[in-house]
Image (cartoon, rainbow, N blue to C red; front, side, top):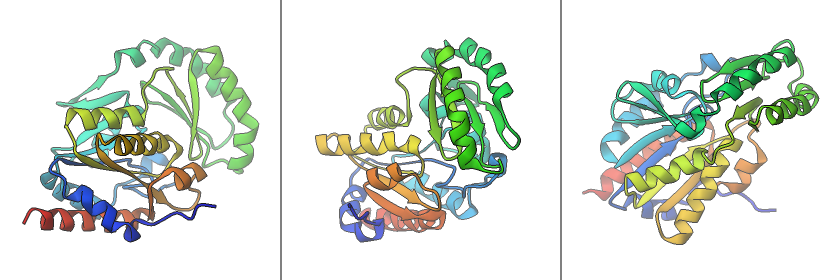
Amino acid sequence: MIVPMYWENAKNNLVKAVHMLRLGLVSDVDGTLSPIVDVPDEARVTPRNLELLAVLQKQLTLTAVISGRAAEDVYQRIRLPGLVYIGNHGMEQWRDGEVVGSPAAAAYRDNLTAATAEIKQALVTGMRFEDKGATLSVHYRQTSDPEQVKSMLAPAMQSIAKKHGLHLTRGRMVFEFRPPVEIDKGTAFEELVETYRLDAAFYLGDDTTDVAVFLTARRLRESGKCLAYGLGVESRGTPQAVLSEADYLVREVTGVESLLVWLSKARMASST
């Protein structure tokens, strides 16, 4: 069994990235910058993380968020100038006050609409359906027995996705219906690395959808293209894939705040 290493014990490795000229910070939002809550609409980025992102935006080449939420939704929850806001797992970006989406993903809008009616018919008490434009989500955290609901409805959700030519993924107590396009958080992260010509980058995330970024970061690092590290945020219910695939772990959202404080101070020290 591999014992995960926490970031506090890996500062000697991480500081090498801090000293790179063009450094980026990219983060998930829910469960990373904001605590997981029963009702997704009630999620709030902590005031301390907002303060730290504002500071880091001035210190780094890139400060960005990549969320499963719609791009406008994630922008409205942070609203810091200078940040890059990417939503729907990389399928859209908030740019100059409007959403710019992937044409490849947009081509499946009719498929999503057709699937919606069948999804709603399958819902049980406590489930919440969300149409995010480029994707659909079904949250079951508020059901009486989430694990039972997941097991009971997974086959039906998979059948609906297949019928309508969509891809079904699972996150922390959520089913997600996506267009079958080669876009995810990992491809979005790599595009940011290329666009901003990053020498180094950190990525923070807590869910199965973030694993694609951890794998991408490792590939970029091992190829010498970018000194990238994936940091998994550990809390109650963290998926095993996050614990096993992240380069290093961070303890809860409060630990993210501590990491960002360290990053800001280390970056400031490296520039003097």
